[in-house]
Length: 199
Image 1 (cartoon, rainbow, N blue to C red):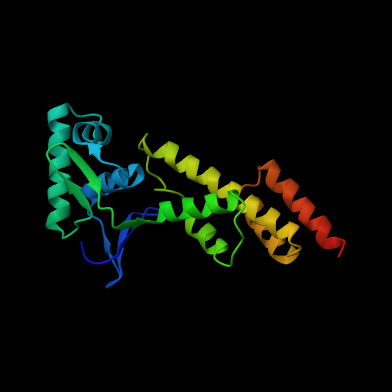
Image 2 (cartoon, one colour; image 1 turned 120 degrees about the horizontal axis):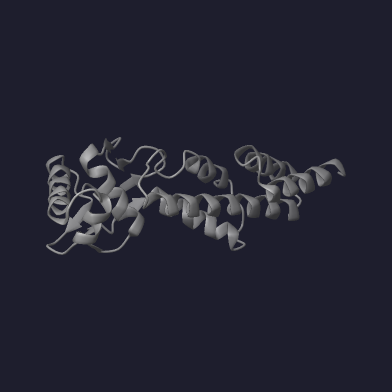
């Protein structure tokens, strides 16, 4: 694997290497890499193949998985490791979804707001693997989306408590623009607006 590698899952999957601008992932290997990245464990090959190619029988699905691994290696993409029974993401690969999830958990847990919070928010805005209809993507996508929304609420609340009303107002407006029907976001925006008006 060439140096430090980051896998981007917000938007179309892409690999970024420190030494270069990165590369597109061949179509035949994108789903396998994304599946391994979201699970972050050693995956049983038969189970992974059956999940990724549910319309195929077990033999054909296993063949598809072997072909996907071969195509990735042929393209010089070595972020997956495998043996006869398992496949897994190389532990040295950084995944943008993991970084955003860690950022969100920090804020939800009461961690301090920072200038990098809005960058993490904007990075997550395309959504996790947008447009992918695979059933296994949906739960991950929605769980991460909700975590990010809670994080932005926590950030705006922390800034309000600290008296940083301009940044609190900006965070609350970003949140309500992204989720116009979210009642908690509107209550938070109203609270920040009242505090700003009372200055």
